Image 1 (spheres, rainbow over the protein chains, first blue to last red):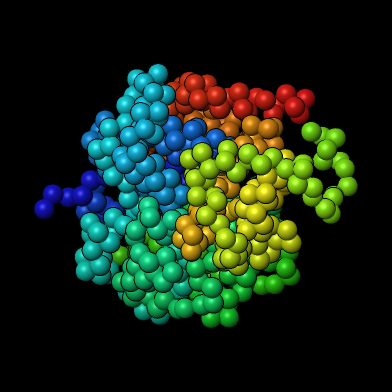
Image 2: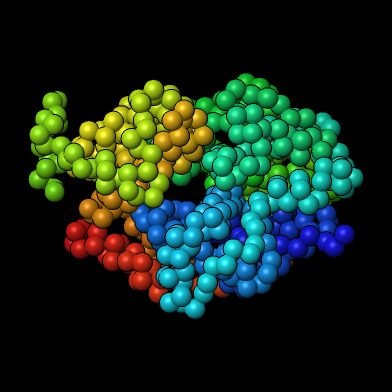
Length: 291
Length: 181
């Protein structure tokens, strides 16, 4: 079977401030035989501007899809927000002829045309569908058997289910299987599927910080040693904002947050310094000895 | 517009002040087609993570107000900007109303009326200018290099600037700038 090949779409948040996700994802992909090709060029997926102008979101997204069509490669994203937007627009434009014609009318002005020839997947979907749990288990050289972690999906990898279809959004299991493939124990905790609140932090910070605080409290109650995320924005809420939450609510959590790709890379034998784990705001001191 | 928002909140809304065409206008817009299917069961509000911590944000109430034709009140409300787009309401609505999509339509209309939170104006300006939602500092690009990552692909900023002009997005953002000035 030829090695799976994808165009890596990074989006804005990861190059802006979550480099550690990209570092580990590239290492994991290479080890598992997933070939990543750089986008020739790219732009914002459109998600943050959908509230302002749906048309603008559509053309931004479609432009990225056209670039991938020109390369004749499917897109892989690390950010579920980008993934959700590109997947949704791809499906809408493939299925709705009127909308496609409208968007192509705009794209024509910049010499582009949406044809509907490629697909979009998130990194964990590539791991599940193109690599498979068996191969992932086989890549583990240093099982993390002593580690008790928990999962946070983030909303956009699961919903709206019409566009995502990765798993049942009311009772998903895929991330847990991926986590357990590393040997780590994946604990359950209250309201696991709750939103992190990140998308509105620029409008209202009180509500997202309360949402994130509740999750951290539930994780602490369950005895979780590290939270595993697959979204740069959820990661930012729980890692970058954790000290702020601790000050605001006068509570101590000290729960490190790892991208799933980092957990897997550690289990593959990469060292914390290979992965730039010192980039994380919440220090990994409590678990470092076991990584 | 600014005069209106300074008036004390009215406890009684007179239907004579409503815009009865509002719900039809919404129903014709992509994303809000199923607005009139709502039978006010309240599932969207009960399952909304934001409603839990907000004293005023209630998806089912926004829907009801829109159906009543309370156009100016809905479009000028700060609550319109609290949806975190988790899409739980879309997946659980027994009438398939797709509230988050209706809300997006309402936000797009509010923007046309000049209501736009500063953060969206900022991200919008960044995208129009750079093709990216954030201006990526030089330091980050150097860090990429030091970490052994390949150079960041170029942002298609020129094409984005042109497309933003064509779809009327640049004007939308500028309009607010004029209002602020």
